[in-house]
Image 1: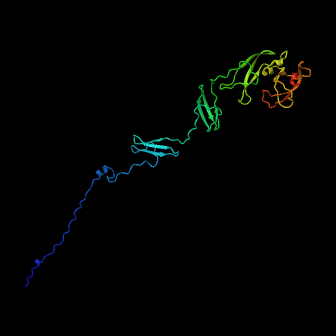
Image 2: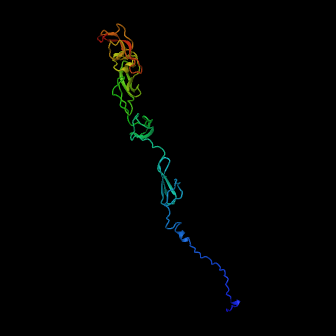
Image 3: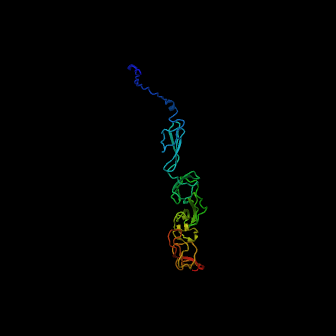
Amino acid sequence: MDKKRPASHVPRRRSAKKRTARAAFVVTVSMSAASAGGCYSTNNPPPPWECPASQPQAGDPCEPDSSCTYSDECGSDVVATCGEDDTWEVEWTGTCNPPPPECPETLPLANEPCDEPAECFYTDACGNDVTASCDGAHFTLSEPTESCNPPPPCPPELPEEGSACELTPGGVPEGCTYEVDTACGVVTAAAECVSFDEGVTYFFDITAPTCTPPEPDCAAYANSGLCAADTTCRWLVPGCGEGLEIAFAAGCYPVADCVVDGCGTDQTCAPIVYNPCFNSECAACGAEADVCLPIDSGG
């Protein structure tokens, strides 16, 4: 028979003791070393630097050694460069204004054709400032302050009324006077270069003091200007129209019409047609007069 163990010998289960949780082991990594080299590790390099999307203003901060090019509203380049003080320097190389019209290299002639309105400035051979203005069709020139081109010389002898005179860059002959013999004695006649067609052609207009000689002698005048200065004479040249069957030579004739039997023994009083607008601006070309002509002239 088994012997029972005393109760005091019954094994007793030990009660479990609560263990106090140990503090977790935390590893702290200092970021100071990582941040010293930038915000990115060597495995993630920073993105490349890019120009500002819009044109920066001069004086704005910028990245050193930067240069950016923009286009303005005119299509011209605007270059922004980062200066030594790390601020933008902006240079505008274009213009919104159209280029000025080109001027001829040398002084153009008056009325020379041109295309665009413009004012061109020159110095002429005499050292004068001259402005050539284009109205879109032709050049007009300003008058020089002085002329170094002298006018052409006067003819050595009194020119014929209506004969051509010379026009040069220096002008026309001026101050042309002559001492001539007339039926009134020695007079001073002047030859002036004039134009009736706005400077296209020039001719001499002869003037002399009017007089009435005691003994008229119109046939002695070979110059129409001197003939006209004699109140007893007139200068006649052939005209146009009917009545031209009687020919006569241009010359100086008495101012009064002749009368039958009023001419010399070798002359006859004949009707003629003359030009009343000789050296004048009228439109007529035929007028009638009676003059003494040689008998063999057809009278």
